[in-house]
Length: 289
Image (tube, rainbow, N blue to C red; front, side, top):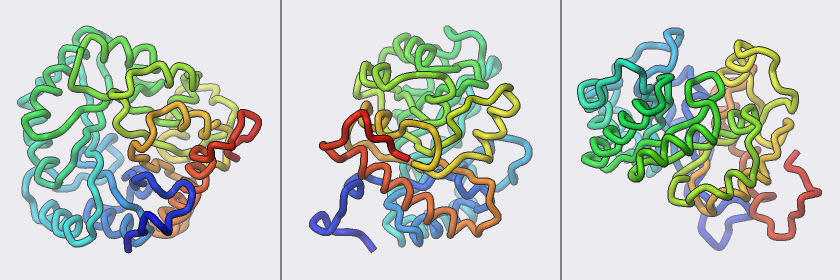
């Protein structure tokens, strides 16, 4: 059930989206149902798996699973914010590799694409990202490059350089855990062109940075914390981003709780943090935890 503008509390005016990594055991159709039941207004869908350990599902083209996912999206009224994940590699051939993915995302009603940079040649990454932006625009989609410390685009500085080379038609996706691990700052976020930030991802994590890349990846992929329960200053991060952008909750937990329980807990925690970020009386002395 949707919440009227008059009855919304602090932090509830934004579109809150459930990211697939939060409940990765669910297929896209199940994820839509989970997001709707947990009170989200939107959802993201993983159409290409990120690791070989994830289930391989028939999610490209108008397969029975995609048709069922579309039906559930339509029935639920949920907005589909983003589809994932496209990796820009040295061998990437943009149209040949990604056109069917883009067509599927457009059929489902997505507007954003999550993209990672997995090519050490940043000039080639910029070229491929610009080509992807042109192709995606044919389908009403925008690619968003996500800096991640264990990829070849490790932080905001590298992401900014690549987007600057692309010139237009692309976004920069800020994920709280990667932003924190790369030691970026709210001032750096606030300096970005606002049109680059089309949505953002939040979670939390221990304040102490992992000592190895392997541990960083383990935490990032499956051992995050609920927003507001760790050491990331989410309030300052959110206040440095453009107001009103969709907020995707990407918080995979070390928990045996059912997906529906984890998704609902993540939504509650995210709204609490957003309420602090949206509170104009908040000062730098108040933390989100």
